[in-house]
Image (tube, rainbow, N blue to C red):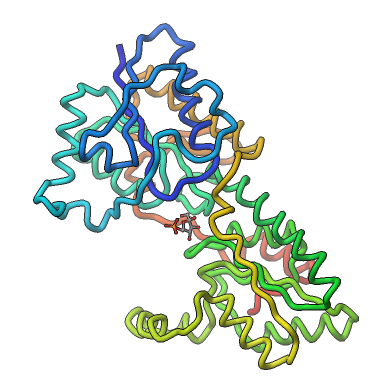
Length: 357
Ligand code: F6P
C-alpha cells in the first residue's frame, strides 16, 4: 500500500490535471494498492490539513480540463519559516500533517517558488517528487515545463488577431506577453506570430533602436508594426540601476505596465498611433494543447514509476529529448533564463526581428 499526497501550488497553468491523472493512472495500472490524498489550494492545504481522499474515478475525464481540480495558491517561500497570523509554525504543520496521514510520498506540481519549498520539505525529511509546471518555462533542470506550449498557442493566437487589425489600420501594436523574469513565452509567441520587434527581460532595450526598427519598416512600405513585449522587459537605463534605485523608479512609474510606457514613448517620437493589447491570464487558461497533454501525462507516468520504486527527492524533467529525474537540491532556487547569444535569438535576428538592442 502506498499513501500518496498530491498538491498543485503557485500560479496555475494548463495540463496540471493531465499530469496528476498521469501519476494516478500509472499507479492504477500497477499492482500496488494506493490511497490518494489531494491537498486543497497548494501548500495551504498541507499546512492546515485541508484535503480530500481521491480515487481513480476523480481523475477520469480531466486530461483535457484546464486549471487544477485541487485548486492552487501562492505561499511565498520567503515567509514560509515565519509563523502564520495565529502563531502556527507552517513548516512543522506541513510535516505533522504528512506524518499524521502516514504518507509515503508527496507529489508536488509547481514552478520556481514551489520548488524551493518542496526542497525544504525534502531537507526536513519528507519524501518528495515534483513535476515542472509553468507557462514561463523558466525552471532550471528541464528543457520544457508543461503549460508553456499551451500558453505559446494562446499568445500566438492573440498576435495573429492583432496582425490583421494592425494591417487594416496601419497602426503600431504592442502585445504584452506574460513573463516577469524570462522571455521564453514572448520569444516563441513573437516568432510564431511574426512580430517585428520582440522585447524580453534578458535583453534590455534601447528606445532609439526600437524607433529605428519601426522607421526602417516604414521606409520599406510597411505601415504597421507588431511588437511583442514581455511583462518584465526593461530598458537599458533601468537595467543599469541598482536594486534600490530600480525599486524607487518602479514606484514612481505612472504606467500600468512596461508596454504602456513604451507605447507612449513611440507615440511621442513617431507621431503614429500605438495600441496595447494584454492577453494576461487568458495565457494560463483553457484546455491544454495536445503537446502539453502528452508531455504532462508522460511526466506523471514517470513520477508514478518513481513512487513504485521508492525513489524520492527528484523533479521529473525533460532534457535532450528524454524524461529524466533531477535532484531537487539542484533545481531549487535557480532560474532558467534565455541566453542573449542563444541560437534561437541569433536566428530571430537573421529573420530581421529586432530585440531593441
Ligand atoms: O508564473 C506564471 C505567471 O503566469 C507569470 O508569467 C506571470 O507574470 C505571473 O504568473 C502572474 O501571476 P498572478 O497570477 O499571481 O497575477
